[in-house]
Each structure stands twice: as C-alpha cells, then as structure tokens.
Length: 227
Image 1: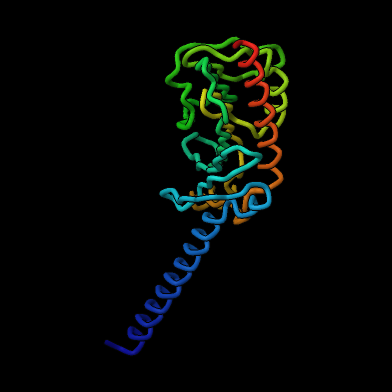
Image 2 (image 1 turned 90 degrees about the horizontal axis):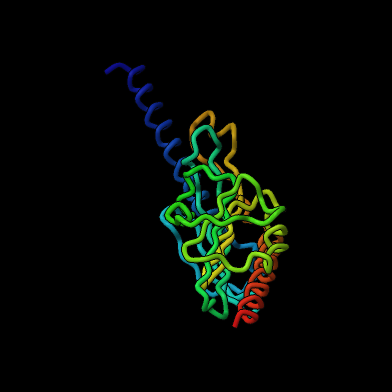
C-alpha cells in the first residue's frame, strides 16, 4: 500500500471518528433537553414525580392549587405535508368524581391522525353552542355535561388558537395544545424532527391550568345543582 493510500485511510478514519463524536454529543444534548422540557414549571407547580417516555421526553406529576395534575408532551409527525409538531397535554384530575358520568371531547381542525383523541371511537355527536369553535368535532361517550354551564370556559380556552383538544371525563379534564413546531429548514432538508431546546414556558402552563380550574369549578357547580 502506497503512502497516499495510507494517508487517505487515516483521513477517512479521523473524519469518521469526528462525525461519530459529534453525533454522540448532539444526541446527549437532545436527550437532556427532552428531559428538561418542563423544568421551567417548577415555579408554577410542585412536582412530585416524573417518568421518561420512549423518546426521552419527561412526563411530570405535580400538585397545583390543591389538585393533582399531569404534564406531558407528544410528537406528531403523522399529518402529511405538515411540519411535525409537539403537543402538550395538561391533565387536571378532578377532586370530586362526576357521578353523572358525563363526557365530552372537543377536537378542533380534526385530521383523523390525532391518536391521542378518544373521540374517534365515540359515536355520539354533540351539538355545540353558538360561538364555540367551528371546524371542530364534538363527541360524547355517554352524555355531555350541561353545556350552558361551561359556555364561557369553552370560549376562553379556544380563544387561544394553540388549543387543539379538550377532553372532559368524570375523573379528569385534559387539554391538548401546541407547544412547539419543528424547525422548517431542518425538516425540509434532512427530514429530521428538530425542536428548539428551550423548556416550555411556565407562563403558558400557568395560564392554561387556571382556565382548566375555572372549567372544573363550573362543572362541579352544575353537578351540585343537578343533585
């Protein structure tokens, strides 16, 4: 083997090693940012436990305003011709179970790719009130709660265009909203999903939790009146 071939082989080995080290460094950085996705929320909720999903994103259980909450995220890259997005799920567990068993799912701009929504398995449609989101799917598994009692809460929640779904069950209320969108240039060039490394803003979580708390309060009032 001549000298030029040896130098070429050394160059290739060094280049490959550098690329491998850069990849490992980037991969560790990505995993750390995924684990820290809710780190800014320490000032909003009192975190009690956390777990990591298969992609390394943290799901957090916490106490907030005398209630139990869960914060989690989900990456959606199923919708064709659209940039991948990160959905945030905010689950507020109800202190008092709704004895009526009422359920309601409101899914705006449905694409039939929302794997997180149970309404695709529910067959009872619900007629929305005036002023509620258009281009939305309204379904119940049993019967809906009295809609007039939560009319303003629904309008307040979906006034934020980032809100995607509201799920009401006897045990909990879950809101799904847009947290992040994948970097366009990175995705179009490499077909790789790349979100910014910043944790989700605490102010966003706090504002949505307060709206959910108001909703639960009004649902409980309606239940008490019915009883």
